[in-house]
Image (cartoon, rainbow, N blue to C red; front, side):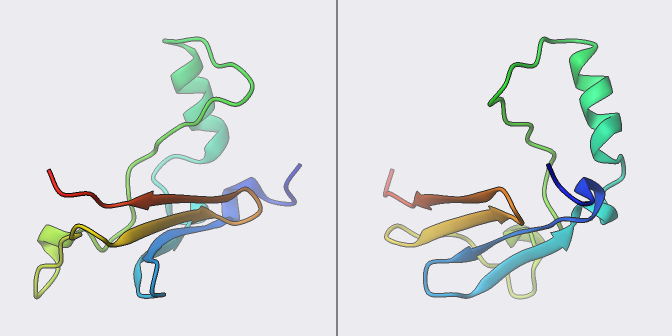
Length: 92
């Protein structure tokens, strides 16, 4: 249980610590309960399901200069109080 699920920090950084994106759930267009209501109206949600909501500002193609992930880098994504995902970038 979270004190305020509508105000959790979320973001992503590279394994070396460079922050690429950082925001809070309070900045999302729809709050967390509304997202759950809308999604559960069209598909069943089960314990452990993840809901991908989009991304905070900082997308690579919109940066100046542009910044894209490269093979060998590790992208670490987090949500405060929930945990982190580590995704190594591999060459195609």
